Every structure is written in structure tokens, then in C-alpha cells.
Amino acid sequence: MTAKDTNRSAWEQDNQKNTVRVGYWTAAWLVTMALANFGPKLIWGATGWLTVTTIIANLAIGFGMILANKRHLKGLDELHQKVQLEAMGLSLGVGLVVGLSYSNLDVTNVIASDAEISHLVILMGLTYGLAVFLGLRKYR
Amino acid sequence: MKNRLKALRAENNWTQAQLAAELDVSRQTINAIEKGKFDPSLPLAFRTARLFALPIEDIFDDKPM
Image 1 (cartoon, each protein chain N blue to C red):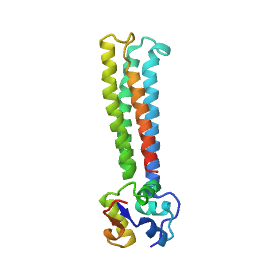
Image 2: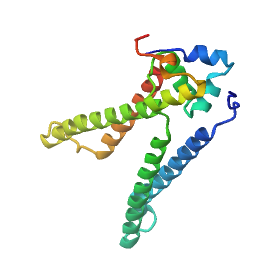
Image 3: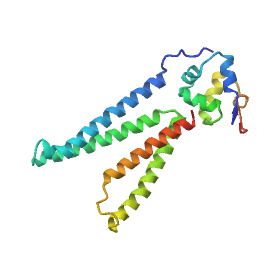
């Protein structure tokens, strides 16, 4: 038996490619998201077809990002898949429970401001990031 | 789950990274298995057994560490 040398294995290289691919899709999604939001105000004004086109492009690229992420997850090894599954489950649960409570606060006028979807996205992102960090630390 | 992965790896003078490359997993996964923090799936256990040319039960023991 001879062990492979310490160079990156084919599995690691595929993994890295998948990660980079997710990064590109996410960057494209963020750019089109920013264009859809700020384009009408700062660039093209009231040109409706440009706004609709950008929103459709953002939606299409969003689906591409989802597929790239799915591919990335499938390429991970079983420990990292477990960490990701736990983190995604936790962020979904926290998002659902806290999001609906936040919505209740708005609907019942307990809070003065409107409940913003962006706050929910930030909460889910932070929960996911923290859960991945703690999950990876658990198996270190 | 108890296992002899660390001892078998040492017998072959392999690093965790080299064993990870052989089994197509990350070094962190090998480390977690050796420390008993993570139990491998059946396919990974079979791959490990094939790599060391040993029966699975000679590497993994279904008792807590």
C-alpha cells in the first residue's frame, strides 16, 4: 500500500472548484440583486422593462446559485455534510420561529416600525454562520 | 465507537492528510474519527477496511470510546 502524496487529491480539487463556483454564482446574484434594487433609483430611472429584466435575471441567477450550492453540498465529505445539515436546520428553525414572532410584533403594533424581510435574512445568515463555526469546532 | 485507525495509520507511516486523500475525505474527518467524535458511514468504513485489507470489525468496534 502506498499513500497518495500530500498534494491535493482529486476530491479536494473538485471540492475547491465547487466552492469557487458557488462564490461566482453568489457574487452574480448579489450584483443583480443590487441592480434590481438601486438601478431604478440611481441608474435608469423609470425605464420599467430594464427593472423587470433585472429582476428576472436575479431570479434566474438565484436558481443557478441554488443548484451550485446543492452540487457543493453533495461534494462535501460526510462530516462536513452533517455540519452543514445541522447548521441549515438550525437557521431554518430560528428563522421560522423568530421571524413569525417578529411578524406578530408588527401586526399587533407592539413595535412602531415595519418588520423587514432583510432583518430575517440577516438573522438566518448569522445563525447559519455561527452554527457552522460551532459545528466545525465540535469535530476539531 | 472505538477504532484502530490511528494505530493502523502509524503502522503505514501515513499522516492524517495522506489517509484522508486515500479515502476521499477531509483531514478533519480522519481526526474526528480517530478521536471517536464522529462515526463513519458504512461506505466509508468499507473503504477504510479495503484500504488496510482488513475486515471492518478489525478496525471498528461498536463500543463507546
